[in-house]
Length: 247
Image (tube, rainbow, N blue to C red):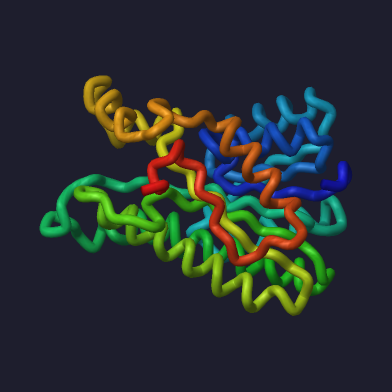
């Protein structure tokens, strides 16, 4: 990766998005981070600058197209181009069986995970296609390729993210733009704690992982940096789940 690459990270204020922003900053990229909480965004931008990176925070809600369009436009106005975009914004929603799901719960999950990814790619691809280069990495999940009782909406949303990734990759290839996804399994983030709810349920869940542990956000960030720079990879999903999908 070029040290002067311009990188935009959505969902950058926590978890995997934050770890990705830090990883790109350590690689001396120019980094734009985005999220909805301004105080945390400003603080993270300060941290990125302390690592030697040029960094800016731009508040945006990926569910709102005007916000997303402005985010991309302001990134280009600040740094002149957009080389890499990491779309990490998302939510797990409220767990429960299919028979208990509601339209409100559906909108909560799909607006953040699917619509947010679609809108982000729409405006990122317009910019990258015009410059005839670029790389997009969407954050999916192990649940993008399998089912999970009690998590139907989250599972469906991540299947959709992977479908969007593959379709966009085919459309963008003619312009020299690559689109891929990284699909983590259990990662030690607040989302994992919310999903498992108790230490006992968390331990039981991690027992299903062949490596017998959760991943770390830094491990997933390393994969994102790799995929962003893998020049002959497009339309692929890199699964990082400790062996959960090996059988």
